[in-house]
Length: 296
Image (tube, rainbow, N blue to C red; front, side, top):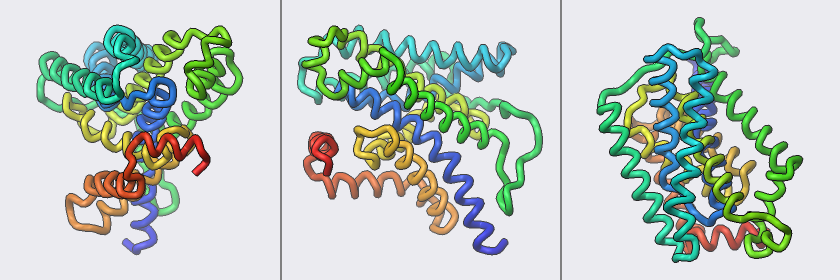
């Protein structure tokens, strides 16, 4: 196959993977902007979304749409409850405490998933049955179209939600200044809980749509969560559109590395980018947030 045809195939694969990273990254950004919490359990939300959809649709035979909605809804509900019960009481503690709490939630969710679903991988049929789609010289699985389409639709829907609804504007106000928001009659705790649930739902959607393209296991959330964090950091951690671009770019870079570099280089890309970001921003997350607010 000529190199330009291989390049197009790498691009298609990268955009598919990148769309998943983008969904998780947008969830990271939404939660971080309102709560100042980097949710290390976001990857486990993706894992739960995938395994719940497989359980309801693949094993119990529910129709796809109700199974999808219930799976994502359960993860969103769980995220909101965990935030309210565990993270909200610690809102005035040092940020490191919240990071440790989300890491603990991640470990517990992974352990519970192992107990319930076991260690065996689970497969799920594509949402649309049929042969792959040919786009120029690239072969595109039909599920890849679902992944990219779902991501773009959700990002557009979130933009409209935050710009044109009362709740969306209240969430934005909390992101700008949580101390001043109550003076405008905004219940900061409720907005933070809703945002945590929304971010968890985005992770669950990412896991659900990628399930037919991979084998879902209790351990799949770790690497997905890491790449979602890297994509969010690539966008500055405060901008959903930049997080979207960061996720897509990370996916393309990974696909190019997998095709052009020795085996195993794919996963090294995310670690290399993370090291580069921390090198360029030695002050860490606080420096990134300060730079974003100051326009740097």
